[in-house]
Length: 506
Image (tube, rainbow, N blue to C red; front, side):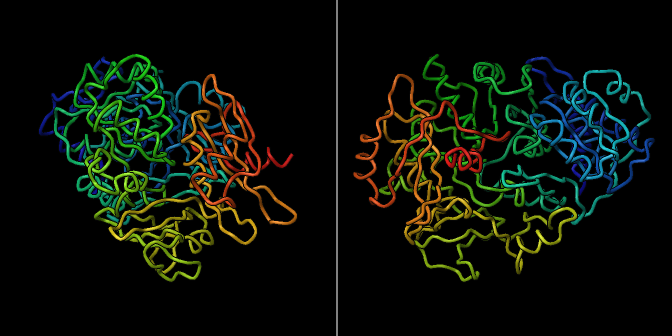
């Protein structure tokens, strides 16, 4: 089904229900929201955009983002979400690769495209300017275009930390599966609920819009158009019953703000975290400071938000004898997915053995856009090879270790950086850490820890060595500690270990 059908259904049943907010200012009820989406679809039709054509969105977190998104779908076209934090050259490459002829953009992003405009790009429509608001007056397309479950509706480009990003083809059926997994593992919503877009709407935060459109809930875009902890706490208190998606680095900043300000997080019902490793020490403190508001999702662009879930009751549980191990996991397979851990030949490994995580089910992508080789390498016999290493316990809890390419092999032994990182984060002098391998003439690789020190703390290599030796095997401890002012991260908050390897190799 076309997602625009859900918007239309809500608009018919609850036209006056408040829908879109910029901060606390209401910009559209559901009747207006649907009218604008239909008008945008009509405007795209006038520009020759047909079913299956790609239309990009390169926009900060604004209410126009959702209007453009549903207008694209209303027209039967494919949305190409582009992170507004990307460099203009990176965004231009995605536009060119996807063949997007029209781009909805924020003014700052549009300015960046001017000098490097891709050949395929015919028009940039700018949110907040006449080029966008004039679309509201176009004769709208009466009904959303027909869309089948197998039709692509979302062309999402991976973060590209190891090379050019790949376009992940997500169908309407994939999205329906993701929604089903959310309802079973996270919970349902109603008109009294709100979702707050502080993380990029091009990613997990934006994908989760569906649940509130279907329920007729409120969509809140911060006036800052981004992530500001003080603003988030204030909005949550004013709206109440607020859910939001957050990367682990954002959760860390929210906890730091709560500690510094005394804020409790009143009004926040669910903070769904995903997109990178959430270390045990961090999520333990988050629950202590802010209470049982946290739910963990493990997914990839190739299986959006739909691989495993760690429900709020498990995140908050401190009574189970293995609660720490469970909290350090990413939960159990979602209702819509099958998860297994395999060796390099695809043989399922016994419980407790580390291997590559594979997943199958209706949420898995159909493949990569115009990249059959990568598609065949990643999807084999119906299973998505995630590239993540992990281990399943006897109760089905999946614990991540690392990306397969990040595993360190030293002296013939496998060392998983996350295990070392977890230990180092338990030391008072360490605020952030990323562990990588460095070529070594005798051992093949040696372990190096790149550390951001905690405020007012000095990093003492001998003390960290002693801490590691007390907690993990000696061969796993770092052979070098490199102190940095910050870890390099991409626009999704993930540490870019390729840059760290280059840095320590100098």
